[in-house]
Length: 114
Length: 110
Image: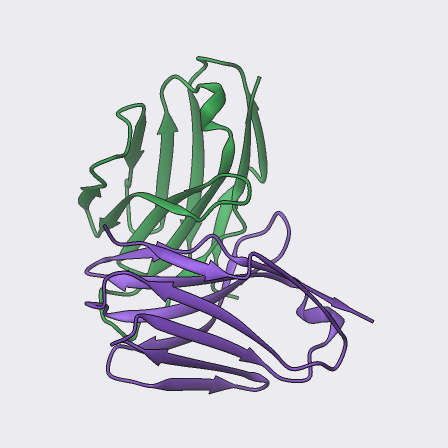
């Protein structure tokens, strides 16, 4: 089945140690999003790609970076994780920007920072 | 500032009851509104999408309504079942981004 796949499911890292989360999709969608969701809070958009065009949210810390080497893959890099970066990271895709387009989410990566 | 609020934060009902979840948003210049379901520790599953020109959408036992002028949406779940237990999130599309509410945690008791 076509889907959005996030790896790993759980990630433990040390304070200050760089970490990369990955997302792949078989939907051939143009748009890929990264959301951060802390416990019992609303998912918060970090950035998104439309094809190769990167769109950063104004309040996303510089500590968070992203790469999209091709249509299928997108990576979230946290350069120096702090304790406050512990969260669920959700990847989502949509075909285009149209108003009737749904978002498809992966199962998320739960990040712990020790 | 574009904000989305969901009330109640948590809800517990007996099996078979009909229930309503509420969502309000501060900026009425929306493109669409979506309802998602999230199971514990999992990603989000899209339930219903209402475009800004529409008033409601239905899927099975779920019905979502949209009143853009008052900045409100409701998700109606008929004949609730224990399998409906999850967190339900409302999200409003502004431009190219979705702004989420914090969700309503629903527990349906058998």
